Length: 182
Image: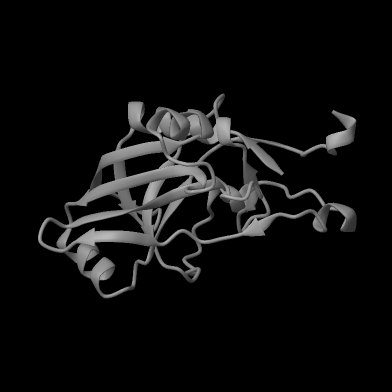
């Protein structure tokens, strides 16, 4: 599946547990009717991945990492835990809309206002060429940084309870077609 986030985008960056927490609250991804995927489609070279907090500054309560990565450095698409992919151009548009409209981070998709966005860059092939970053150095993805405003949330980042960012959004789900049929 692929998301078209540009048309109807409400994306939220969150500090999140690496393991799912059963809270009874349904997320957008839980509400979407999942289409069955044929065995042939499951055999495609799509990789699942998690995006951990990569850098932090304890004194300033800053956390940085990948919000999402569309493609690995070798060009392989990444599939998320809901069996969806976000095409690079859609991720870029979603990132711009998040920065333009929201810029707020929350805790576990339940409580907002715990952090504020201080850094955002979408690494695309074109931008990396312009910056002189050699091909194959970085994945195509969205790098973010947050200033955490809530001491309790920061303590959970420090002790490893919150190890990664999680994005949530609304999108139109479309079936990814076979390369030969497009």
